[in-house]
Length: 255
Image 1: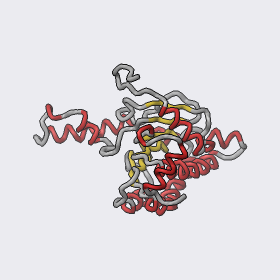
Image 2: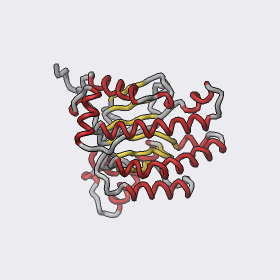
Image 3: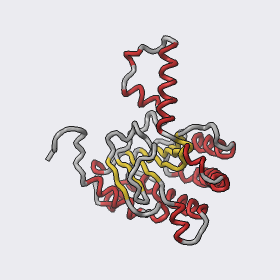
């Protein structure tokens, strides 16, 4: 796919049949079903994760061409450390390879990479690739790609509140100055637009400790497809579904 330009964005939106005002600024996706996809095919779970990584590349680049401001992918939760050690090791190796392989693609598509989640516990090999990707895309001005790796929303909020409390205890912040904007800026996603749309694959109807603060007003879209089967066409279907909704934000119907 070609590099992102105003012309390629306009063309991508035209193919989708939606104007820029009907496309969400920010999309979050829970990448679910890799293991079940592999099991259906008699393959090891690691094969499902590898297939899922290929889908990530296609969906992320399509989102960048459509002009999204941000995409946040829930890839590995804090709870996922309870999986078998060999699967976790394979996943960490896959993350390191993916980041190294896709770094140039992110730069070419003007994508700004950001890791959200705790660094503690991640292998050095993964941390090196996270830092290298962050540095390599630091001057990019296009879509944020936030990879939630070793992430849990309750932990994220706990860490943010602790940091705010330290500022207050040191006298650098008055308690009355704590507001929603400060909390938002203190989270891992500070500066990134909150998701307008959450997509979850594999048919599960739960948030799974993902972006609990940021998803307050997001629209939800759930598909029974496993993540490796999620295509650009399915992504377009989710975006068109979103475009047809009337977002009231607690108010009355606007039409």
